[in-house]
Image 1 (cartoon, rainbow, N blue to C red):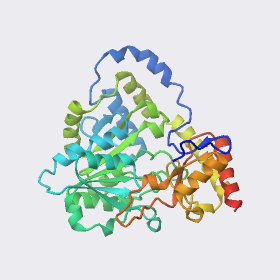
Image 2: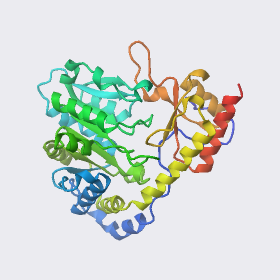
Image 3: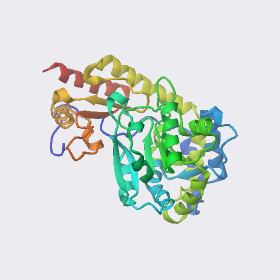
Image 4: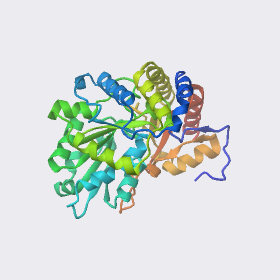
Length: 381
């Protein structure tokens, strides 16, 4: 919508959620050492080194899972979480072939790959509004039983994009219980789980094991794009229900890309190292501190519990699209209209229409300058 419009000041782009923190120093030497392995076909299930590194990270992150994760049964590397969040719907649909009218449950606002998956599988996308009075999470108790019986899968992001909402263990337990009672799969998108400023978010695997004793009907998705500032690496994994991981691995073996071996070596090293993650988390913490100091309570600002986005209410400025145009044209700050992340219902309502999303992925100085310009705009009228 900003095409052809010149920015009013030196541009600062907060519209793209592409991590901009420095990559770890050890990445380059590992790639250089293993570059010859680009000449080999990599295994779809990943190397023992990579799967073992993922298991070790999972057990460090969630101590209650120590000894509960089998590298050969519970783990499947992915070429980025986005690839997995899309491709996973096809074996999910295959396990419910008797459904005459399959549905996919999606939070609204949402990450676009969830809707793409539903469309690709020719399943009905059901958008569950994540209202602010419910902490920007869907009301699980309001979903009709008949709809739950039709569900192939439910996507649930925690921390969420764009709101930064975090599902606590009780909420996750309810979601897992519904998945088991109605035999759909809970796809827990946890790719922002390592970006938090106060308390690490609960995880669906640890919750499933604590509450139910196993991982049935639960698949979590993780990524090195956000955790390790490596969006170009295209490396992640999924983990959970072994009765689903096995057929999903077989499906990926014929339908999806393998991760090149040099990238698997880099990925294994990244999952083994926490120092770079802690350093990155400190940088995000400083930017959220700046946001709290500069914005105050303007635009309904509340410090998100996770992720690196701000979700600001621009209803008093004409809504998200109007605010986006003004901020760019007059102040050179590029943000994303919230309506672009929300599904519009039949009555015309879109839960994102009043909002804009700001991605705090740049350096502190640029972030502070952008926030000051937004405050200048707020106080100019």
